[in-house]
Amino acid sequence: MLIVEIGIPILPIIRTIFIQAFRTISVHNSIFTAKLELIQAGFNTLSRTVVPLSRMRGALLFFHFEEIDFFLKSYLYECISIYKQDNEETKTISVAMKKKISLRMWLSVFFGGIWQFICNIFSWKNKTPFWRVIWATITVCVVAFTCMLGYAFYDEFVRRSGYRYSWEDRYDSNISPKFKYRNNGHNEGKSYIYDSRTKDKVIKGIDWIAVPEDGDSLIIVAKDGKRGFVNRYTAETVLPFKYNAAWSFTDGVAGVCEGDSVYFIDHSGKPIHNKKFFRNLGYDNYVYHGNYAAIPVNGKFGLVDRAGNWTFLPELDDIFIGPKNLWYAKDDNKWGVIGTNGQLVIPMEYKNVWIHTNNGITVAEANNAQSRYDYDGTLLDKFVFDETYHLAYYINEFDKERNQKQAVDENMLKYSANNFYGLMTKNGVPVTAPLYSDIEVVTPGVYQCHIPETYECIMVNAKGDKIND
Image 1 (cartoon, rainbow, N blue to C red):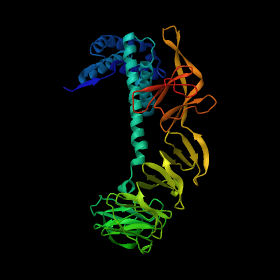
Image 2: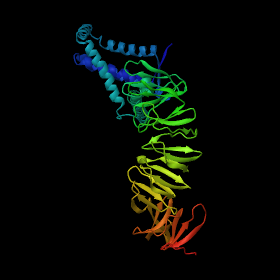
Image 3: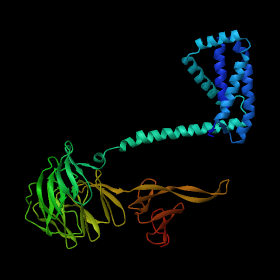
Image 4: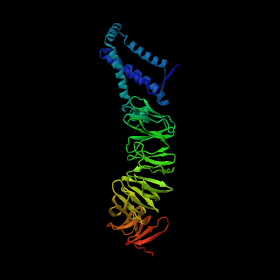
């Protein structure tokens, strides 16, 4: 026998629907009005006999279909028996019912009863504490389920819609408005360039490509272990696949390697000068920036102009490009800056240098004191620093929780430069260079300065002089 498990009380639903139906009928038949109370009392009696069972089973009722059918038939039979007191009147009412009850009326009565039941169960009126807890729990579950359903809808149709692209949209690279690159694996010879409109493959068997950052029209294409150059707008091979290594075109010049020799070419493939350089496999920046290229020779670096001449002989420890085509240069562990004209704008005598995109060049001296220069080497600010800090110290006073209070030194500040600290007055006048890893105030006018890379300290006064000397 099939058993149905119902999560809400079934009898109140049945009762509500039937009572609503009989009330509708009673509008046209006065005899039904007098008998409604008897029908409703019957349902109430049946509900009282079953509700305890529902509470025992955790507010779940278990009915057999035969039992439900029995209850319905019993009450219908009782209703019919009541109104068979007068056969003629019953026939008249029956005929009237057949004429009056339509499908539209039946549907309105049916759904009206369901709506009345829903309004009744969500009303707190006349509910015991037990049912209030039950329906509060159900309400929370419904709200939580609605939230989860809403989030699932958002996740499925809104958030992920931005990721629902074809393979082409997700993985293919635009190399120009007309052509795309399909990457099927690095160095596997399975990638290709194709026309984005016709989908025709233009260049097949590609290992990888490299697109210039400055938007140059020629891109590097690696194929069959060789490098060539392809026009990104026409997909035509401009320079054949004959180079062992190649670097992107920058400022109209590209470095290429045949065998173990590196030289520089223009867009036609012609060398810009007759100089060739032995390739250093550990160096990967054979690129002109402006008029110069940094070239390594035997572990040292030099700067070559577009004629192939050494502007700086390969005697420096390091040279690499910075903003505005300025070059960082290092020699004997000291830094400087080479300008766009191939001359030193900042001499190589500083502990550190920073070339900023828009605000000049900052240098740090041996004592970590910092200054700022223009790009042509003109001094802008003799004294610059990173940040200032107030100096606090403990006093012989306690708060209500017996915590010792602190006071702030009203005369001195701590400032940072190049990740070190120094003292300055409240008026902004530096008292000490930023020589220390930290500074603490002991009492006003006495300061404990931590020596870098040690666990040792010294004491200085408000003038920056050592007290313990």
